[in-house]
Image 1 (cartoon, rainbow, N blue to C red):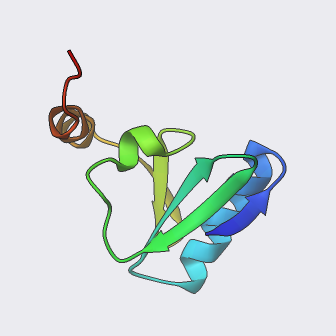
Image 2 (cartoon, rainbow, N blue to C red):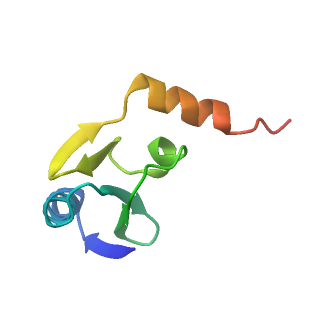
Length: 81
């Protein structure tokens, strides 16, 4: 994890730049006491709910999570009764 900036706009710019420098790898943003960028070879099934901004970056382009990705995330999360 790398600190991506103080604001969401700074973090999006950082993620796009990081993604351009690392083609073929996914960049996601998460927030916990700051905004952090994560670089990975694959998207995790829980990426849609773990990410800030409802998007990820691949090859320098921001992409929104699809309904299928969001559904897979929902189905992979166990219900707590």
